[in-house]
Image 1 (cartoon, rainbow, N blue to C red):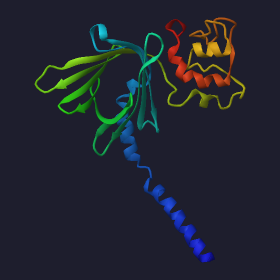
Image 2 (image 1 turned 60 degrees about the horizontal axis):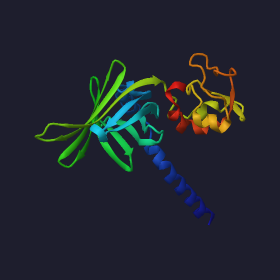
Image 3 (image 1 turned 90 degrees about the horizontal axis):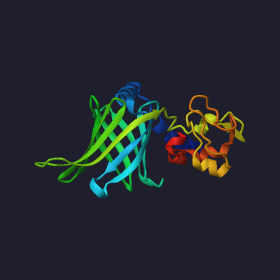
Image 4 (image 1 turned 90 degrees about the vertical axis):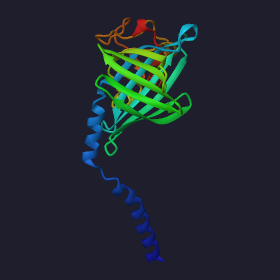
Length: 256
């Protein structure tokens, strides 16, 4: 019985170890992935601007925000886009994972948006990138360019034999680095568990934070010194940071 038990344990450990052995890192492949995604490093950071879908009186205007950053040692890139309506509600939200396969030499954007998901080919260009969504006889083509600090992206419906029909355009400017996808909370692990100074990355205390902790408005820190405009430096409850991720984008421009 003892020998049977030992055999079972050995067999189980072998099954557990097998996937680990099969997933030994390939330095050459990892470097190829990093080098490929480095071509799109201009996207990293936080961006804000205007996006318009449609045209004329039915056009939908939103304040578009993007936060983008590398993960897995720079071998993948995470993207989240949020569009805010005039009343502060979310009018659009999408999440994407951008990767590169050295074997096929192809970039893939795995996208989640508005209840849909899919894998789409993305092709870097000298000035930006192009990615497409095939829809039977029609193709949705997004073309992005970076010029003079402005990220312009347009969307066109493309049908063979017909002129492209534009239905989307956004123009964004980069306004800062992004600690995302690493939450600011991780950066506070060694601070007092009851309170922590506001990370310079956020550069703001949002309306949500102001309301919840009854801080005097305007309660955003000074851009250069990090000190608050009223009352000098302030220490905030640590629990506030759980709210910042969502609420940061809602703060009016005059507080940023």
